[in-house]
Image (cartoon, rainbow over all chains, first blue to last red; front, side, top):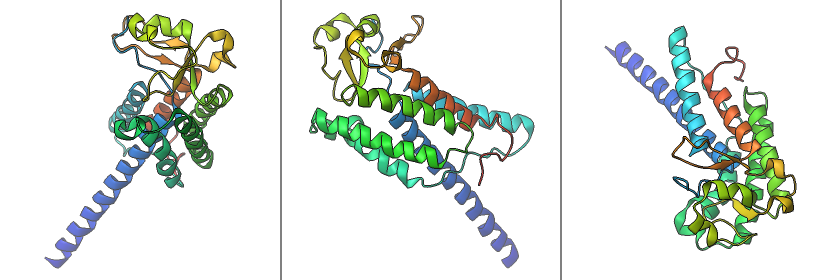
Length: 47
Length: 192
């Protein structure tokens, strides 16, 4: 029982770490791309 | 928005490709990621946040834009070995160069603006003026732009209802982000 609980906690923490790492990477990349680029879309739907 | 679509497309492609190949998708692992968060702050305040951008002057916005892109460039150079980062770095460098050489904002040629900005909006703008407080662009005649081929001189195709202008640098930035996320490179090549 204790072993199963330990395994669950371990796998849960792994998933969390992976998800957090992915979210952080994605947020950083979105910021990087938005900050690096300079497109202009003021025209909206165009003329 | 157009740059975000490259991130979304890259994520979907990378995840789908890994699934199709039956292996785990490994997104890139960045070093010194704090540089991105710190570097993006001036742009967040001066361009993206409606509440703060109206309070800040164009001078602050242009200085903030340049400082911000210098931080981001440092980040791309630190992570240069990650697949796709070289392209992204090149795009950022090109955008930064043309911004710095043209008064601190990305030049939008008048001739390009006429193709996609409605005439009423365009009529309310003066040459040399920033498009609006949420924009990184200033309106300039092409003859007055330094390195005009790096400016926002390309326009999305007519068949797209969403019209926008973009630069050579933007193409490299989008391509780099897509390449980085798509996982179309050899496995583990981007990992520490």
